[in-house]
Length: 168
Image (cartoon, rainbow, N blue to C red; front, side):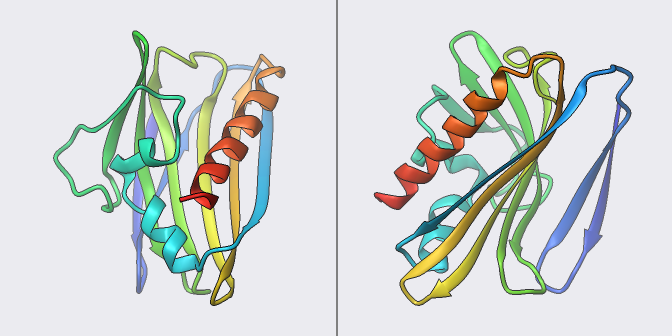
């Protein structure tokens, strides 16, 4: 079960998912941070639309907004396909926070691909300006899993996506 709580701030609407986990799976925290030689605004233009994941993530075969919302609106839902398997995700936060960093936060709400592997998955991408021509890109996530070997796969996925963004 999940509850979605919305909180409006000056520049963004933030949603929080509250999950009730009944499994005894271990919680994992992943944090991949890299410097990209592009402005934070340029990087944000690449990632801000929740429906444009395929622009920087080549693992999925399709990405479709399913609830008719604009891809930048909190609450937007997308369906990702990989073969016959799907991942449903919801955008929880999207925009500049009070510190001036760009935040792109989302959660997996349903899946046939990662069932039992990435339970209660919540990811946050934070883009922070370093200078006019470089930024810090942090992709972090937390999830519960009984399958620890998938941790390296998610780290490699994040690094691969960041490399595509870097080369755009």
